[in-house]
Length: 75
Image 1 (cartoon, rainbow, N blue to C red):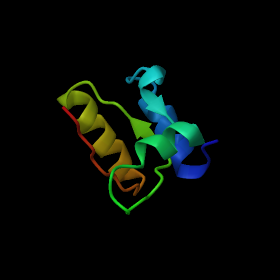
Image 2 (tube, rainbow, N blue to C red):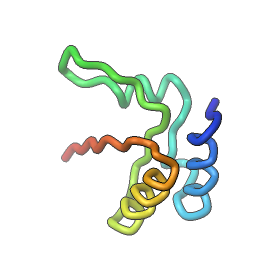
Image 3 (tube, helix red, strand yellow):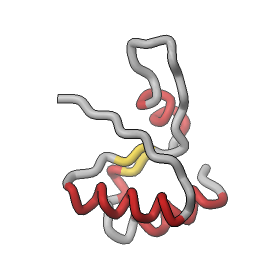
Image 4 (cartoon, rainbow, N blue to C red):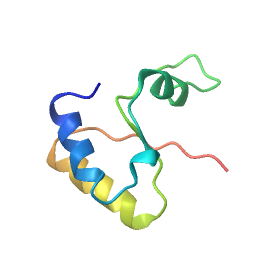
């Protein structure tokens, strides 16, 4: 469950980004926070952006709320 500034971020983003591409369930965030390395940091929220406009919105809203953003990509 999202609280504080993460809840505010979610509420701002769902206006533009489809809820089905924003994950905050602990199982999903654990899955997305894991790769083949020993490093593990479980994110509070995972957003699958579809284009540059959504990325720009995510960065803008995150910056306003002082929420760090980490990019992860796969082909």
